[in-house]
Amino acid sequence: MEAIVLVFFLNGAPIEFMGHYESANGSWQRMQIQNCLKVKRQLKRHGWSQPITGSARYSCEMRNVTYGTSYDGKEIVVAIH
Image: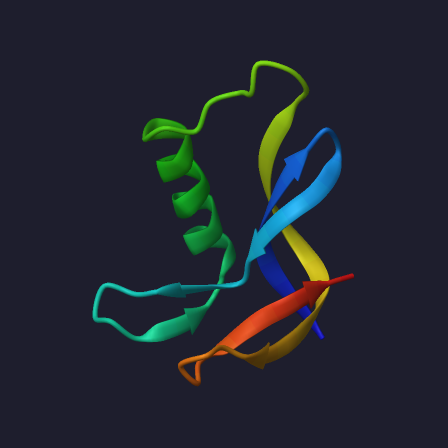
């Protein structure tokens, strides 16, 4: 299934990803492009910095994903392809 995910790349390789977020009213939501860009912007403003060596970047991408269940029963993206 395809979904928007925020992907963290380090030296060109995907290291971490996020496909869901908690909305202002506390509900668990699938990532949409506007939410992904908002989170990416917040990361840049509040502490995301380049590592001393190598390159790091965040990217909002449409990816094939596998969904699963978190420890507290919420739907999460468990893998990107």
